[in-house]
Image (cartoon, rainbow, N blue to C red; front, side, top):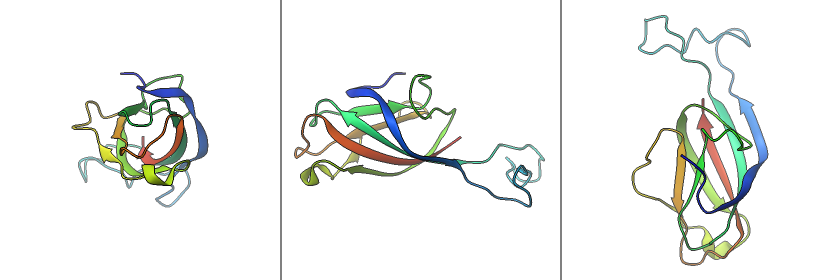
Length: 125
């Protein structure tokens, strides 16, 4: 997949692994399925600002795109999408079914304006 309706590849506001377990490198507590001793890796939390070229059209940010400022192999959850430019443009909805496990796809409200900056907060691997 690719980014859709975005100018550039985003700007990192925050990107950090979430620690859990008994030691900083210990991921043994993350097993899938439980009891299998199959480590799945720790989660990361990212906050990325993206510029939406057409403020009223759907946009997508793809974690699998190597040129993006934050990349990963799996989107765990989208925590928020917040327009930090235009207050009227904050009622985001998901753009149908997410087509891959790396794609954040949103539809702005009609109050969005061209080149709005949207702050995405999400968990990923």
